[in-house]
Image 1 (cartoon, helix red, strand yellow):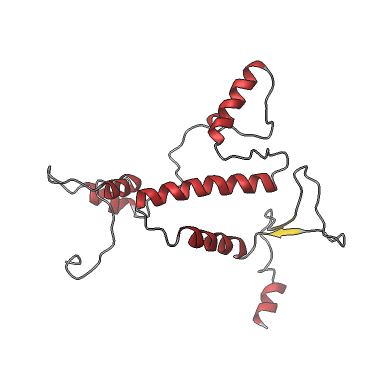
Image 2 (cartoon, one colour; image 1 turned 180 degrees about the vertical axis):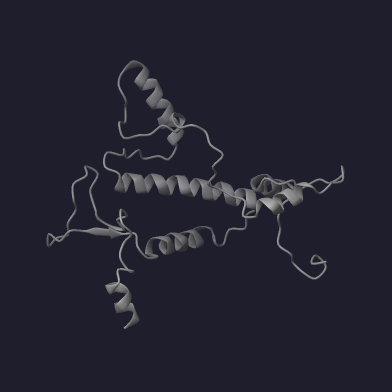
Length: 188
């Protein structure tokens, strides 16, 4: 009863200007249909897509015993491959390369365009974009105040961080890594 009232009030609708359901298209941008000529739709509303992706991550990497640095590298490569496969499937005209070394395609595009035209018209070279401080890997979750307080700590000259701790500190943008507390001794 409450759900029906919310639907009638328009609270369960898509936001204006945002489409969460769209018809599937093939690599040429043509609409896809099933064997009964019913249109095929993709819906990004809800949690099916992220849940399936997270299940794949757990299945793939869940039993691996790796450190933070290697886990970050593996997830970066996984994201690269996943984004390319999605682009091949959903972006009309996006080239199916058969490999994931996109920096080589960027280089090839530049070399070909110097003598002829563009090799892949729907391809965006990463070098065409301005560099930013944005990152997609391990990111800071702490407040600016906490980061400033950590940076005010005077470290002994003899302190040497492990490679894992140094990686976390660099990713967090602090002198020291933010680590969980494991017991009463550390909680003092």
